[in-house]
Image: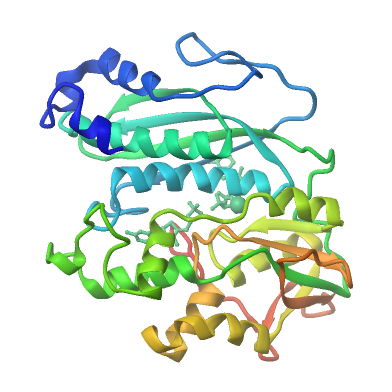
Length: 344
Ligand SMILES: Nc1ncnc2c1ncn2[C@@H]1O[C@H](COP(=O)(O)OP(=O)(O)OP(=O)(O)O)[C@@H](O)[C@H]1O
Ligand SMILES: Cc1ncc(C[n+]2csc(CCOP(=O)(O)O)c2C)c(N)n1
Ligand SMILES: [Mg+2]
């Protein structure tokens, strides 16, 4: 949001100086709406017209845990935290109807950062047609956290749960795997010491050139094809989720919820890893595909022969058997890897 970064009341102002009303005024000025928003931001609650069952999900990002200021701009964080939520809606076969945004930050935070965050949120909101309908502000002694709650609906009328997979079905992914993790790895290798190569410039995709720059850009602002959620539901997907914590960990969630075994296809996974091999090496490349989080591509199961166009088959389901539900790779159950906020 280059425009408002330069406009407004000076570039060095803090949230404390702007005050709550000032911050809200800035935020409201950037927002767009839709016909189903009967009352938008500014009252005690929003009022939404809905025509059926409502999807509800929430996802938060915390500075130092989910992003580093050296690697991601506030605009990146805004885009990403909304996309995480919209991907969860898509993973049910749904689309968004409204977003609630909470910002918790110290008074010393530059107002420019909050404006840039809001610009990122407003940009993805406008691009996807999902309006911000409200939110909350609170302060902290230093932590910065952004939480988004998304409401949605299921256009096809059938929400796709994690629990519907059956033995003998195909397991497929709607887009890339490992790009966000590869981008994070490129950023890690470039360092966080403030050197020019490790700094977010806000201009290009960041460190590296060619494909690596694309992975970094994807890590900062994931761009999964959200339309594949409703498309998969319409095609008869039996189970679905978005890959936020890694193929193995998230695949395990479908396996457990559905009581099936998922066998990953070595050739298909190897082909997806190929993109990363020359830059990262073979083992890290494979690791990105198997355990990389924050991708937000959709992972779904389909009866054989019904996988929709644009999806890549990465495995199949089988009876859980005496070993129980789980994900199998190269003939063995795999449990390790993937993201866990508390390290489990
Ligand atoms: N603090 C909480 N209180 C109540 N329910 C929670 C809480 N945290 C998570 N859940 C629920 O647990 C389930 C798993 O949450 P999780 O955040 O892992 O979702 P996910 O879709 O697997 O991951 P992601 O949020 O990265 O997309 C969800 O149904 C979520 O609503
Ligand atoms: C500085 C920094 N370190 C690590 C990561 C990686 N990371 C953070 S949360 C997450 C999984 C999804 O979380 P959730 O399940 O809450 O949506 C991953 C893979 C990052 N983005 N930035
Ligand atoms: Mg999810």
